[in-house]
Length: 483
Image (tube, rainbow, N blue to C red; front, side, top):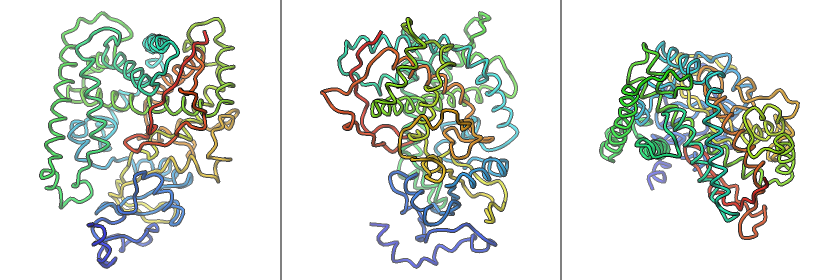
């Protein structure tokens, strides 16, 4: 109803400082107050691609009073993420994430600063280096073994593979980050799952009016959002306090495979307790949802495309012949598996919009003037389905990545499942290790079918909009043991 009334306001009421720019990017017409928010549907990445087809690969929108630059071509993404990476290295301030993540003490949402550079460097070298990620291979392999055991326990009855995959990724992160054993009772185990779910729901569905309409920040109090966020932040902090306290009290056994919390406690300055809690939270949130969703989409795509499934099973079963479980050392030889994972992340990108950036200063990009404070959205989903960059982009064809230099490390701007540049995801190796190991073991050990005689054509590949794109319906399968 409000939007209907706003249509009667003259468009010139939205005049803003962009009119003084020498040459701003093209913009769709705006409404007063709300700007272009009315043009964004339940799937923002789809709405933004439709607008970009009309207004171009660099497009300036207004979300309330906030200018937002939408990037929808590989050339434009390269300019933002490589040429002007430092200029666009800030994060927008979000009232919800600020309160949850200790007001910018974490890596993912903090503003660009010397503190951020130091903490990110520590995370990359101490927590997410190749050597450190490899040191946790036993934890991943043991959790995958328990996962396979649970599927076998279904005795070829219908299993909710989406739910089991989510449990697997949670269990791995629980062990690696917090040091708990997923197959034994632990006082953190239940709390950990509740905390992660609460934060993900908060980030996905609780939006602050003050982020887009600063003069309406009072509405967050009136609506109860501030109280809800503060309560969640208090519960999260209480959980993390207990984790840090118990790790302090534990005896150091000198084990090389310490969990992330123990490693952080050993580092010292600039890692104080609040920073440790913020980084722990980063690892838990970033490592669970997108990894589980990638696995869910990959398995659904393999079932939907039986020829691809058959080809992958042949590769994996040949290399793993005589083994009950694929180990990480086996993955090096599985080229088609790697192509399948890349294609899955291209076509079914869990996070279709790269985490927003913000311009730290005025800059000219591809002939357009961008003002400091402008937020930037890279539509990675649109890039990965651009027919000018990909042959038959709507088809699931892993072969496109065989003998191809295109990778997910952020150097190919048509393909950005993990972002790129300074603010790209530092946990790529950790996520890929889980994804490849899990998929290889599922296809090695089981033949999968849809329940109740359903044909693959009946598998619903519709996405559910949210913080990440899940399958709308859980992936239910009948898993018949192969070995």
